[in-house]
Length: 327
Ligand SMILES: Nc1ncnc2c1ncn2[C@@H]1O[C@H](COP(=O)(O)OP(=O)(O)O)[C@@H](O)[C@H]1O
Ligand SMILES: [Mg+2]
View 1 (tube, rainbow, N blue to C red):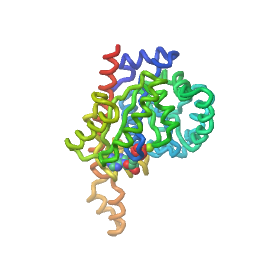
View 2: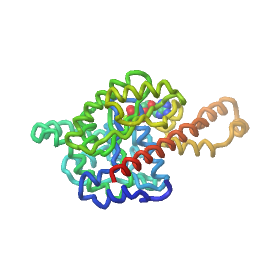
View 3: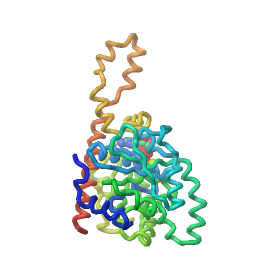
View 4: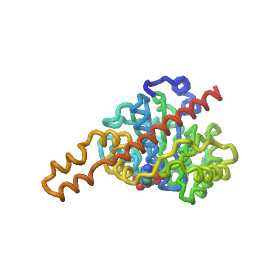
């Protein structure tokens, strides 16, 4: 994970950018019909990690709330068009024009935001005229734009059929995060139905895997029960539940969204901050000391960062294995 374009399959895909299917070979939609299962966190962390590792990455944000812009720290910046560019590309079929994220070399985004709400009316009309093929609109706008990228990650909203359907129409892979709090099966089944319908217009779509999010480490029973839920929803042998899980850490999650720094960046922030006794020594009084201590990045950043590194590596392994199998 240190050089760009080390992966023949990604290179091949970019050479054939004219051919929609081949060009979209490394597009991963991160989706689940349920909200709060880690779609945005996983997109942000993987995108930032891959870019740091030297890959050329594009992150698409198909959310009106655009939490990806919080997690990656570009909300309200000059590049944040609140989904206007993405909306225009989907509506006109012109290529998406990704923008580089300031301070994150190798990472480009197509920002999401309120403008994406305008798609609903347009798409309803198009589906009436063109049938389900209308959901290839994102694929058409994306295919000519993916040439430079090794990986494209699409963050999707919960329960917005339209934007999820557009993402599934454009992706080669579905990566589905889920929580282990029960209730996951319902979201999975809804997504499995949508997945089956999307395959009618995008036959190369496949389930890459399922990621357990905000879960206790080493919970074998949970892993087994999620495995059985996935098989109920998607069919036996449908896909792996990944070995990598994202451990629970409320505080890291809050810091990521508030500071626009993903887990591996918080990890280095934590390592570079003064030790707690230095903070105490430098404080005028106990009030100032406790305020400063409360602002510290907790050492658990390192655990979560390590979880995301494992996930990033496992996703690349799965892609390489799948590409090897079809080469
Ligand atoms: N490792 C974690 N442990 C616990 N909560 C987390 C973790 N990472 C993120 N969260 C929180 O979980 C919530 C849902 O995460 P998010 O990635 O936004 O999910 P989704 O995009 O599926 O709605 C957010 O409030 C986020 O702050
Ligand atoms: Mg989200």
